[in-house]
Length: 335
Image (cartoon, rainbow, N blue to C red):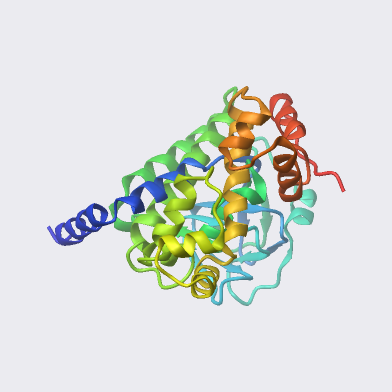
């Protein structure tokens, strides 16, 4: 019964600001991940590893506990069995049994300790055991994805947090699939991790959308910047300018630009370009629409202007992006 007031308050808030839920839904719909390298690890204390900036990383703690220190987060975070954590921006980070334990490069350690028949890499000393699964994720549309500026540097869902049954159930499924060694195991685990990530992002939105004091969610809460974000996401094809957006939310151009940049982390038009290119990239991957139609839907008057903007943002042309998606090739921007 203690949760009823907060549920009612959220319902009232959503009714008062219908654009808010649609805005959050739009960002969640844009989650497209490719999970790649996956490791099963069993480390005995003392142990400590350092992971460089190699993209978004996730960890599932199956047994024991350890400390995670992310460069962009002031204090180390204690992880326990059943926890799921995502280093969203790929910042350099350290994992170890105790905050003072010396560390070595993670990938060098894995090279020196080949996994056994059960596909578990074992290392460390003779102390208590920590078992976990870790892997890397890539946003399908790279730096154009709005989540790059939406999410904090670290997402941490604790075991049993708010009695969320999905975490334990999905983690059990991940670990059982890894233990099975069945055909297609890696593909199934990839999909399960994608689900974990989307659920974690949704939980972050639910818990912080009404209390965030800084960042993108704080911008969504703001009664003027929030509607401006909704306009951008909902009407990508409009010829928005900073001045026209400011006018729609009854602010001066300079004040709007300053507040938007402070909360969101980048100027209005740069943010608009990001979500336009992200939407276009998603459409290129998911449809056979011609470049003219894709460009128009993303707010570009010509294919030439769209191509220039797309390459400036991604490093490759729209055609190259679509071809890479169809062939399954990795995207390597040209210099």
